[in-house]
Image (tube, rainbow over all chains, first blue to last red):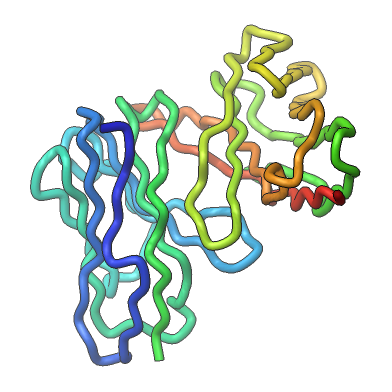
Length: 112
Length: 113
């Protein structure tokens, strides 16, 4: 299995909802990442997990809460989001943080 | 700063070669990458080059690296309509225990039939 999967593909939520994005990989990678990408812009790094520990948090607001339950799974819990948080959320994984990253297809999030 | 610059748009005819350019910032970057993103999709890793190399060829793709000028380019030979996409270069920044990728601004490649 050489891919990163993400669910759901699309998500529409209100500002008072709580939802979660999920990411999974079975390549034995020990680093996993969340990125946010706005239209016509490059991806912006949000979080890095290395060996299931959070190693980088790029000053992301606390309404985004990452979780790495095991080496194959990465979640992003969402609560009290704002309309400006609408974007494509990309997950990636790599053997380690010094290796090439492989991306999932993304979750298109719309906050109403 | 950490700005990685690319030209916004490139239009070529099918069968021609395309050259996408990138200027990066960190001279200590060990790896430089090219990713392709089709509309509504994630990023696909196309190729990468180690900083001690000048050139890398992989089928239709040729990567050239000029470390002195911090300039990276991607040449696509015999460009096809399926190559139409946004192309991002990325540099790997040494963050101590954890490296991270800094992406370029992206180049939209439009291939005319």
